[in-house]
Image (cartoon, rainbow, N blue to C red; front, side, top):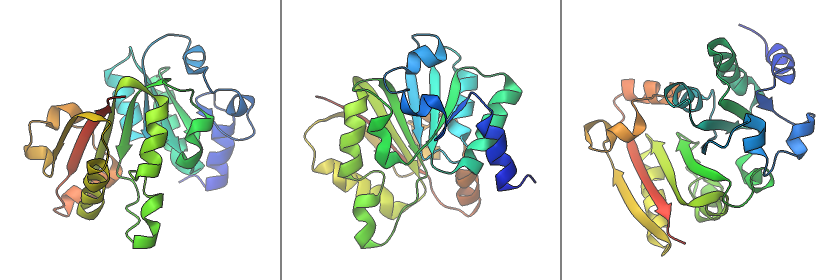
Length: 218
C-alpha cells in the first residue's frame, strides 16, 4: 500500500488530476470542454471519494465527460489510477471542497450532477453543511444547465428524509422521482448498477439504498 505522500507525489504529475499548485486549478472555470478537447456533455460527481461512479460512467459512456470532485488527494489517486490503467481520457478529478464549486464551473457549464454517499453529518448543528442542503442546492442550480439532472444516492435514511424535506420547500423543481429501496425500484436502471465502496459496505450490512433525481425548472 502506497503512503499518502507517495500518492500525492503521483497525482501531482498526472494531467487527469487538477489540484492546488497546478496552473489549471486557477484557470479551468469555463474551460472544461477545452480541457477534454471536445464538446461532449459534462457530468460531475460530488464528494466522489475514490471516484467509482466517475470512472465507471466514463467506461460506459465514452461520448460524455466526467469529473470526480473531492478534497482528499489520496482518495483521488485511486480513481486517477483506474483511469490511467484503462486509458480513459473522458474522466478527470478536481481536488477541492464542494463549498468552492462555483470557483471552478461557469453558470450552466455542467449537464448532470451526481451526489453519491456523502457524509450524513448527523448532528443538527451541521445541517447547513450537508451537501444536499438548500445552501448547496442553490450552488448546483447555478452551474447546471436548465434541463440537467441532479442525482443522489445514500444509505442513510435520516439524510435522505432531510433532503426530501429540503426539496419540499422549493418551487423550482420538476421531474422529481425517488425511492427508499433502489434495488427493488423501477429507477434502478438509472444508476447503472454502479456501486461505490461505501454502497458495497452498507448493502452487505443490510442497509437499503435510497435514490432521487430531479431537474431545476428555472
